[in-house]
Length: 212
Length: 97
Image (cartoon, rainbow over the protein chains, first blue to last red):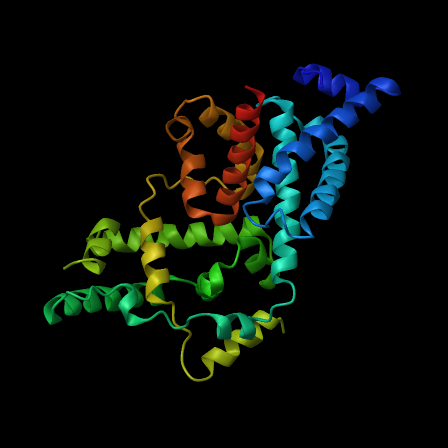
């Protein structure tokens, strides 16, 4: 496979005839070589769904690349940009398949829920240490109650369910991932300011949680 | 009513749904971000290829693009995207040598 510059990729893909076909064939090969490395993070290569998913994502990637060719800004190598698109398509598909049939009740029932008290407890901690941790936890819970909007609370709890991806939480809240991220970012800003008002740093709080 | 609202109502009819201790800890950890400016998922998606290449070249991407780094630290979805891209670039580079 020839190594093209960004400019050559763009020119060939925008052209008609042989150059375009050759570029598409090469691009297909690029995607099909790279995608399995990423996909195997979430799906075993032995899984019968693996190869069909690679094919499906490759097809979709080529279509999307051609459609979005004008948005390529040259910040990276063209092939890196294409890999990025392929991963995005693959992740969206995997998340959709993973979560689509799960009701919230099932997800919550299947979780080890609530988190056992021992999760943040130190078995060697004495009663006075546990009291300090409990006090800090209670204090932070009060702050969360007072600072977070209802939507922000809902979002946090939802994201805590079996590490639900943002994309999925956004879908369930009938919003989009970007809006959800901004919601959470606003929540973080509020909490940061509130902690500052109470003369607390995040590291002090974490230290209290882990104090011996 | 969306299924999410119904689910929450189910929890709330007895008492307010609790945020778990572990989640509280994660939330507090995420407050250690240095910048109040935000970089949303769309911003990160536009630039994550550049960020990954910077990292692969051996430059300190986190230092050069701190807002991206902070977003990746607080957004699992974008972090997954980035890690996967890094994997492809690293493995492709190794194979080509």
